[in-house]
Image 1 (cartoon, rainbow, N blue to C red):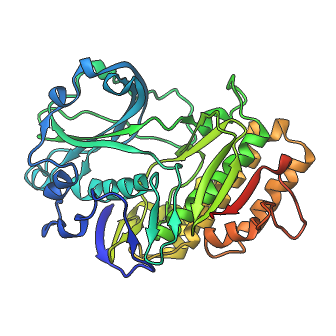
Image 2: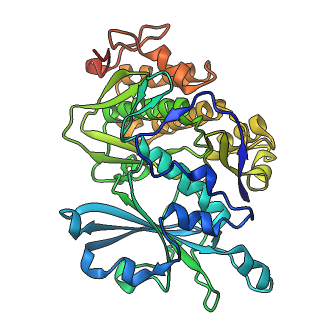
Amino acid sequence: MASYSTSNTPSANLLKRTTELSSITSIRSETDDHWFSVLSLCHQRNPSHFGLEFPSTAYENFEYLDSGTYSHVIKACDCEQDNMPIVFKIIKVVQRSTLNHLSDVSLKGFEMFTDVYQEIVIMKLLSNLHDTVADKSGFEYQTHSYPRIIRTRVVNGEIPNYFLIRSYNESARKIKPVERFDDTFGVPREHLVVVMKFGGDSLWDRIQASHPELLKPDQLLSVCYQVSLALAIAEIVYQFEHRDLHVCNLLVKPTKKAYILFKIRSVEYRVKSYGIKTCIIDATFSRMSLGGVSYFTDLTSRLKSTAENPKPEGHEVAYAQMYRLIGDRWSSWFPESNVIWLKCVFTELFASDAFESHADQHQRAIIRRLIAMVTDYKTVYEFVQAIFNESGDIVSNDRIQPPQNGISLSKFN
């Protein structure tokens, strides 16, 4: 699996409120390693030491969340920021030069800097959407539905023991198989540490019958609308495609706010929260454009076998549809992939224990209509335009309305 940056003219030149990413296109490495580019994005000249960069005295209440093929995810509280809940994503990274010199050593479980460079760029740009951004016509956009990035650092040394890293749990039930995060001793490697504001708990956990705090149908419908609006915004602003959106890559956390706010083309959308705020995570497979450059991951080798499966199941259906749509043109913009994955989210929530066991006929009718409608559109933005009108009601052929008028829209003065 390879990641690249390539020229591609975006539909609009977006003005960025922050200046952190203003030099991204000028720091692309002439080699394929991207080591210096990643360091530059992290505002570093050289890697720092893990323990010195993230001392135990600066954090407390460490909590192990999960491990994947390439990374650990750890929750903690930042003592220097009023004990704000944060998340560390710790990615084990190796330089291509090391890989070339150690051809006899298995480096399974490592990412290369070429891959993580794309992910950092995309994560930081999505994080920028927490602040209002404007296009060249002055239209404004904003969403708080992506992780807010606090810091990114490249570090040397072992992961400190206070991070409470656990071994991979093979007995834990997961919606899809996850490889071990194995350690390889003696191999020169570094870690990329991404520090984010805590985005919530796994949505997948909260829709299982065994969970003590099962989400309610109204909350799941709110998740559908929040995800749709967040995707539409990133789609317009950055020609963004998630390319791996399902319930395992959605987080939810409690909120006291009655409504979740979004801006699209200087129009404010309000989604009734029902006490839940949604966060879209994992940009590993994602694609977007900035300044005429596309950031993407080539998924051909990863998805080929899935696409050839005559009887795909679960997420494999969406992967296969996306593969047939894109082929080998991973650098190009295919907003239809967002439609494919949005339908996947709707379908998973409709079939979940939380919805199936507690939804009434009206709620079932709404989500069925969303599933039926979404594939009629080429982009998620077009879908959003179809389900909202000026009075804030859901628009559909059947005139299905959300419970308690859960969504509204109003133009800024």
